[in-house]
Image 1 (tube, helix red, strand yellow):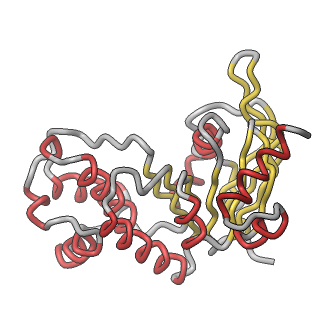
Image 2: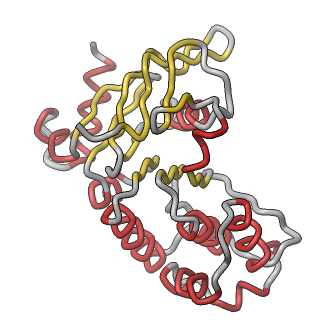
Length: 243
């Protein structure tokens, strides 16, 4: 059996009297790609915040490569890009990449950085421009470049395609598939079911803080009688509403 990159064991999270995560049980095997889907308010971002120890869990346990998530050593093998990524506005693109790689004890090799920018359809001139001059799409590409250049064992992305045009989206998908082929683990949230279907071997459906489904996109279509992944997803969360 493959080692679990991430393990959620009966994880619960409350905000006051509101239960946001209800006993989450999930194993993400190392070297696999997992898509986390759900409507707004389902608990996706909260689940990621709990995983990264950005907020306290009220019950259960989370492990990252066998180490408790609250141990700083567990995060040494992770790269994370939040949905609302805001790098320091006063840095240039080059400064930011160099700083992030230095934190990971890596050198910002010029050829690799330029190749990554090209793969993400980000003009190399952006290296010498201040981040405050970047568009939303350019900022997102900069964050993705920093994450991918760090070559993490586990890449966690919250809505990574946000603000990207079709050309950039194609480039990101290609890079994420390459990462999976290298044996790295990908866990990301997305409102785009087509992106999940194209990139991920596995997906989970989170609804009202509960996991309703875990399996392949094809299995979701089969189990919930959908003509498409979108229809199967709607059938899945609809059955929960009537359950």
